[in-house]
Length: 558
Image 1 (tube, one colour):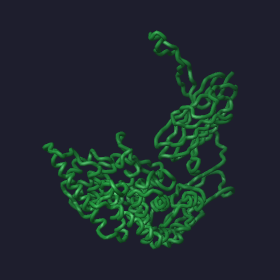
Image 2: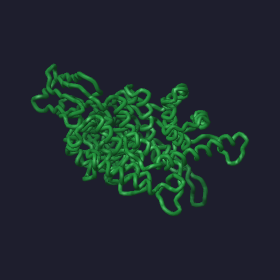
Image 3: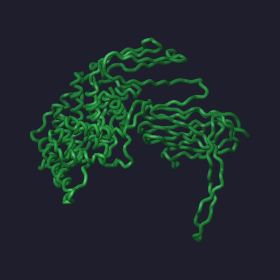
Image 4: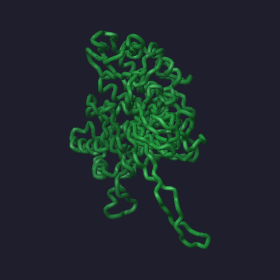
């Protein structure tokens, strides 16, 4: 299961040190949801607490050690039913104390605080989820919150009706907050048809997060299937699928307000996954979105904040139920050259503990072509990955990579005469000579002259957002770098650069999804035929993320 890797995010939520309303809620509700999912699977929670199987197949290394590193000593209550209930009671009591006299919630509580629709909607939605997980709520707490939201929605509908005549107060369109409040109220059995019509009318102006919320509210309304299909099509236009690594993501509009709650890229994917879990849970797109969501945890086991992490946990829990990941029952065989090298029985009793790694090394991996075959008997999805580390005799060495790729290009720089207008001491304009070059791309084994200036460009393609990477470009022996002082040199990636005798290293703090370029210059000096070994890319804290470029050969004449 990929979705059940969400368990690793719970220590962060449970141990978050601050106590605003949202963080108080999300300290316990995601844990309650996950605990209910695990108990419904009839799992031995104490056994899971000592889990050694890493459910994210893309991560390599010793699973128990990695889990210990991620947890960092944080409190993990989900495997202890008593702790879960104690934690829930404490959180509910605190939320009851934070509820204001009018039934809503503000960011904190106390003198001067007022109820806010977004905060109240977040809390009411969380309480609804907790109740569905059989958590007993304090009397009237949820109902008072629902009534506050219903009153707020009624006022917004009145303002929208007033827009035609410009009667104050009025507003011209239904917004993202209206979509969230409508979704939460529909979950609680309150459906204002006027607000639905306004939201559907203005859907093109809603963010993708709000479109997902509108879709969730429409699902289950048997008379609104056409509207639901239209909203699904509206979101589908933003989907980008990557067949190579079997993931999919939402390319949000350039004007997406990322700094606002409804502009969160993470929450957009989470709400879309929830919607797909209800409309096409076993489809390929849902599994690809789930994979992308897991791969793009910004802090190893959780996402950017308590709020978006809680939304992701909720979405993955719903996906696990709807897709069948919660009830695996299969036997998996790994065959190499027709011989069974590994067999594993996987069901709910050992999902977190079965041995999921086949490691072959030394004489077991001989030269030549090898055929690896994976066979599954039974039901449930299966995620797999294969990694190969080898000493190669191929000439030239060819590029490799999946999640990150590196392409290296060489250019001979030819000086061209150029000037630019500058201002003289008396304000007059004059033409000043400037240094300018024309780039001529070199092909493998091209000839250079000693003294030629060469630019080395690394083109980097990343399928996800990553942190802390190193790109080591191996220098051909006949080249010497033009720049020799290491440090931050203002390159386009903001990388720290180390100039060494045999390589140039770029240390990248944050690598966004997409294509990037970084370059440096060398001078051809020593005559001969030389080989520049491949550029190597690696994540410094995630050993499975690796790539290399092609080898490049060059000749230098005197």
